[in-house]
Image (cartoon, one colour):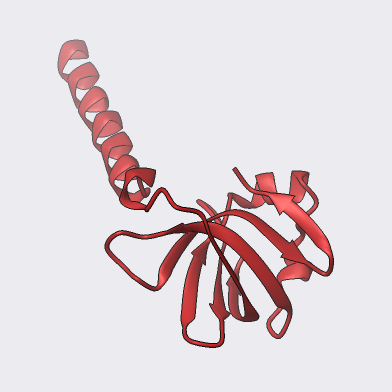
Length: 117
């Protein structure tokens, strides 16, 4: 009975870890050339596993993947700084599969530049 219980617990934990890994992005799906865009924040999320903003530029809207909230907070990028209507400049890497998605390396808001990676 002990052996069966151990096997079941191991299977459940392994399954949970695999699901978490599949839900998180790998960075290999992004281009290697750094791109810089500026615009106005239309939507924001300051939630785990990472924050994000919808950034409206002159020619399109970008889904910008940011860092985890704890890292952003520790580096001085607060949730209040990412409010809708705020102008921001993002330097990052465009997704190879979604031309409107970008992984941010750094963001500048209100004259403050924050390194995200």
